[in-house]
Each structure stands twice: as C-alpha cells, then as structure tokens.
Length: 356
Ligand code: KG4
Ligand code: ZN
Image (cartoon, rainbow, N blue to C red; front, side, top):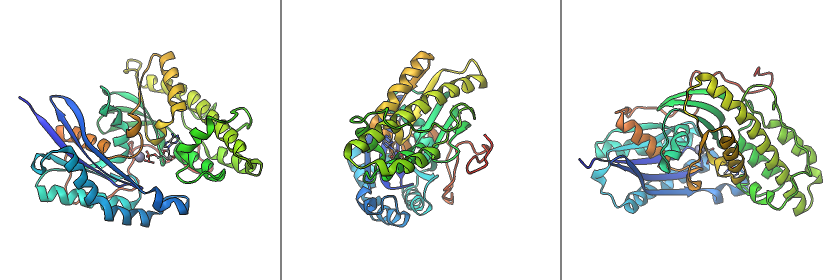
C-alpha cells in the first residue's frame, strides 16, 4: 500500500517566520516546501532581536508564509494529516503567534495538532537529509542553547553537558557586536576569520580541563572586551575573528572528546553516531574539526544540510511526522512553554558560583 503522511509545520520561536510541508511516502521523507522569512532588516538598527517587533512581524506574515508553503508543495489542503507548531523554548510573544495559528489551522481542518519542542526539531534535523537512527550523541549549538545530549529515542533525552553561561551562538554574536560587525554578526565571523591571523590574539578556554563536557564562553567575551581598544583596522577585525574561531574549534575539539567518553560510559554498546545541529552547525571550520575527530574515534558524524541548520519549519514538521506515527497528539489548550527543555530532569546550571 502506498501510504503517505503529510505534515504542515509552523515555526515562530524567535525572529524567523517559517512554514513547511514535509511528506513521508513509503518510508522516504521529502521536504515539499520550506519557506523562511527572516527579520534581519527589522532588528538590525537595534543590534539584536526586539521581541515585540518580532512578534508583530510574525502576526503580519504567518498566514502568507503558510499559504506560500502549501502552494509551493502542490498538495491540497485536505491531504494534510496533522499540523505541528513550535510551543517552546523561545520568546513567549513570538511562540504564541505560531502556536495559536497552528492550533487554528488544525481545528479548521479537523486534523490532529502536535506541539513541538524547537530543540527537538534541531535534534532530529539531519534525518531530513540522512538515515538517522536512535540512539545518538547530540551536540546542539544554537543562539540560545549549547548542550551535549544522549538521545535515546523520540522525546527521551539525557543531558550530558551544557554551557554554564553563554550559548555558543550568543558568543559568536557578542564577539561580532564588540568588534563592530553588523547584526546578525555570528555567521560573518567565519568569513572575517578566513582573512585573519589566528595566532595573533590569545583568548581563554574556560573550564577546558574540568567540568566534564560542560562548557563556558563568557570569559571569551570579557577577554575580547579587554582588547577591544586594539581593534582599529579591518585587518585587526580579521585577526580577532580568526583567533576567536580557532579558540572555539579547540574548545569543541576537547569537550567533544570528553562527551564521546561520557556517552559511551552510559553504555559501551551504544551506537557511535554523533549529530551536530543548530544554527552554529553551519560553521564550516567547526564542521571540519568535528568530522575529523569523529573519524579518529570511529563515530559516524551527521550534520543537517546547511540550509536546515538555522531555524526553519521543516524540522518542526519532521518532529510532527515522527509524533504522528506514534499518535502523540496534543490538545488545543496546550500552552506555550518558553523554557521547555529536552531533558526536563537536568539541573539548572547557570550563573556565578555554579558547581560543575
Ligand atoms: O538555531 P538558530 O537559527 O536559532 C536558535 O534556535 O537560537 O541559531 C542561531 C545562531 C545565531 O547565534 C547565529 O549567530 C549562529 O547561530 N550562527 C553561526 C553561523 N551561522 C549561524 N555561528 C557561527 N558560524 C556560523 N556560520
Ligand atoms: Zn533554533
């Protein structure tokens, strides 16, 4: 029997309004459409995302973006089997827009509704372009989160390590801002780094040799603030970006080695699969060092396609698809959860004086 499952995914947790149609036919997953509307122009003059402006832009665009996703996919409305929308974590005013829109579409089509954890979308995203199977070790590196997780199965996560201060994407963005690279600066650091001398500035690698695979990046920002006055020319910016990129690569190399050990300590017979996902996974330098390290340690290393690293709705539809297959639906009174964690039992590990 030719069984098709078609899911509409909606994403609005931060500054991207996104909608996508993902379809599985005979076990093959296909993205039929993936529309993302970014709000860089709205937030640029403020140097970062302004939640109320982001929410307003979501309200203005969500129906058009969804219509575009449906039209581009060439499916008919009645082919949609379920609607999946991000319910957290993220900015509450932004999440509310997509979640309410998703619930309304599900109710009007009389189809099941699935509330999706945005981080689970990132966690599963390589499944859109590869044969990803549970269990695996995940490094999630985004603008708000940086964690190593043991992914046992759908919805079953154990956090092995986390940042105790800034997220990695945040560290990229703050560094860019300090040296005067226009918002959104994170992705541009990599371009600047290509033209710089990576050995010019010595930056700290906080908690490198302690705290297991926990991470810390706040010390880098402080160090960069201290040398900010030395950054005068374009070449100075290139050199600082290159030194920063190199330092991050060295930290991730060391901490991932630790994470491999900690993951195998969970159970030595676990499948040696390592997934890297989230916006920062688009960084080619990071990708190269983690792929090489995986090879040395006989881990299969999987990244999402570059256009699926940053926020999108295809990954949200994908989680919707996996939950649909298990009939894991949600009621229409499901509330936004701005702090929704993948491992809800994990201890809060942030701030001064925290014990790692
Ligand atoms: O996953 P994402 O799109 O949004 C969140 O869920 O947070 O991640 C966005 C983050 C931003 O901090 C952005 O600067 C960072 O990912 N990012 C990068 C690169 N592309 C995006 N950081 C370093 N290098 C890149 N190429
Ligand atoms: Zn994200």
